Image (tube, rainbow, N blue to C red; front, side):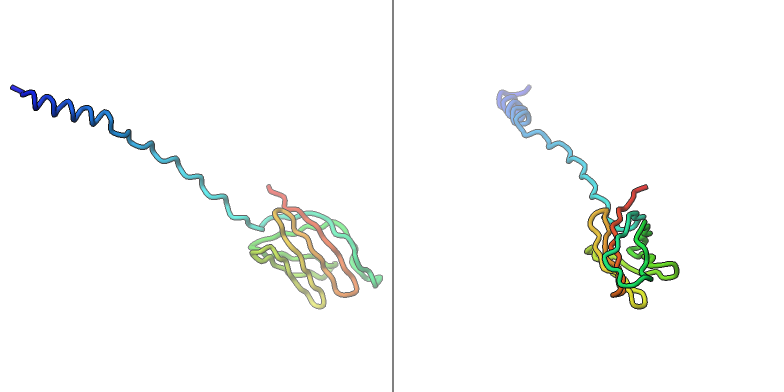
Length: 130
């Protein structure tokens, strides 16, 4: 037969169990990190002339840049392409014989200047997401 002492111990244990802190709720699932900001894509825009000391300077107009693995080519004229690349910090640079390209990518915008010292074009393009 249970004694008063056994009954009191059982009551005390039940009271302690009822007062115990509830188990913490399960941790909320962590938000996945955003995808890396890759420069790759198709950039479309225009160019304007800032220097034209020769009649043979290229014409300004529409610009399309296909950036893949941080690399792209800028069309200077009919037969000349300026091979260029983008650094992780967004700096753009490229060259062809006697021609330099310097620019900057910020977000979805890629702009810069292409010059041979006699002719100069400034381009501004925006990445188009599919």
